[in-house]
Amino acid sequence: MSVRTTRTALVATTAVALSVALAAPALAAAPAAAGHEETREAIEAAVASGVPGVTATVKDGHRTWSATAGVGNLRTGKPRSADDRYRVGSITKTFVATVLLQLEAEGRLSLDDTVEKWLPGLVRGNGHDGGRITLRRLLNHTSGIYNYTADEDFGRTYFLKDGFFEHRYDTKRPADLVALAMTHKPDFEPGTSWNYSNTNYVVAGMVIEKVTGRPYGAEVRDRIIKPLHLTATSVPGTRATVPGPSSRAYSKLAETATGPTYDVTELNPSLAYAAGEMISDSADLNRFYTALLRGRLLPREQLNEMTDVVPLGEDQGYGLGLTSAKLSCDVTLWGHDGGIHGSESVALTTRDGRRSLAFNFNGDWAGDARAVIEAEFCGKADEKPTGRSATHRPDQGW
Image (cartoon, rainbow, N blue to C red; front, side, top):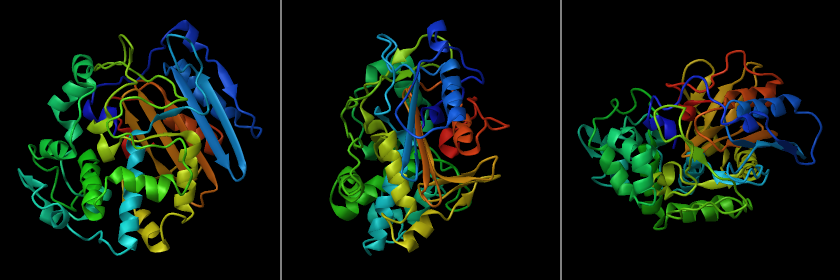
């Protein structure tokens, strides 16, 4: 789930440095392969633009390179670590889609099943009709279901300062999140267009639970986390803290990129549920996406379904919980990004799974993620960097 999908004017086109001290980032690299100078410069530039700190890891064949810039704690000045765990937001969606596709491969459901078949009466009201929405349309965001995080009251309650500090520990039930979406009209008729909706993946998580009789997080753990030995990855449920080692997470909690900076590390992630609650680190994310694209988690038929994308304009597409994007140097990458309070993350890999990059900003109002990606895979910054803008939605592409 992206924080910025709920408040269209949250970030400005230019970021403001937090302080003179942060403008000169402290850089530390783990022992690794030589090179990556452009990537180092890109993460330093993110810190100079206002991001408190960045952690990044590249896996290239049998070689691993990690670097950090800036700080993980504004109060103590403690630097970020290559081993930092962080909230990964919508990267959760790839895990959820993978579980649903595994269930399809086992013959326990079909992606052509309707939501109504598994969750009768859940998606209904104001023009929504779960009988016309397939599981596939949930996973590729062609359902038309309204995005609950776009609700104005939800945004004020959970993403602006006064509401956040009053409600940060609230527990939200997934059915309540869907019910909120049902108070709005659909974005479009099912299958006729595309729009990113976190509600789709809340429903997808509920389908997993109905089919298996277990929490979706338990299925993620048993099917993905444990087999791949993702020791830094977790599905926190209602746990408000981030396990160590980790850094603090920071946000402006306002409709501008200026003003005070707040520590937003602790929150009850049930407000994101299967749309974006998970925690991981860069090494685990690289391992996950490498295994996924190499066919270790899905049979070929299901992996082909996952990578069958809905075109989203020039050189971008969205499959089943998986995005594709072609960079300026014609390299095509697969993965996802995600944002939740104070944490912006990206994880992606080449189609053969040979080269992967995962990184995290521990602030949600500054920095150019696309520049980091272009620097690593193309050896230069993008000629048309996206930066942060009032209309940019990171979950739609890099």
